Image 1 (cartoon, rainbow, N blue to C red):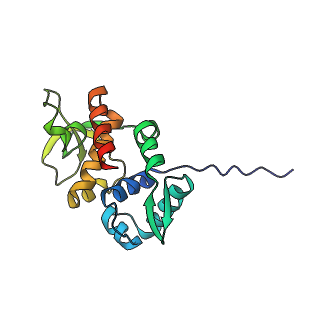
Image 2: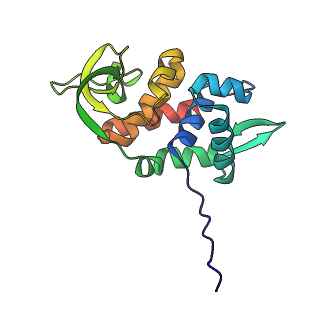
Image 3: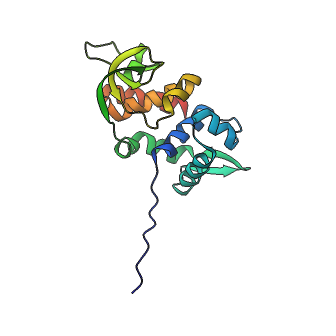
Length: 177
């Protein structure tokens, strides 16, 4: 008897990371090498991520350019992605502030006595509780692109924050998309 093949679509963290990067450069024509340079992904990872995002109906190619399908991406971002890409925390480390400790939320949320969430990174300016980034190359890419940094930090606030932080992050994403 032949065995049935189960080919379920599974989004990977780099797929969603690439979508957040595309949202950071919305409107600009991006080639695969441009996206690879922006995100720190290899060209084959960019290609695979775009194809999986297209199959998930979060992205479409228009005039051979990847374009986010805003309604479906927004719905997944605001209501589903935090359940798929769960937060993994670590010990106290030096790193780059994220979530409520990074822009734009750091202006709206008063710092507490708790250590802030940080992505572990040698170039980081803060000491706090380690939060594993969505993808390993994300902290370095965030340092190169302020809008991408804000998108990644807002997503971290969505996936780890309390209700107020999540609501503020949702508001910022509503304005950006």
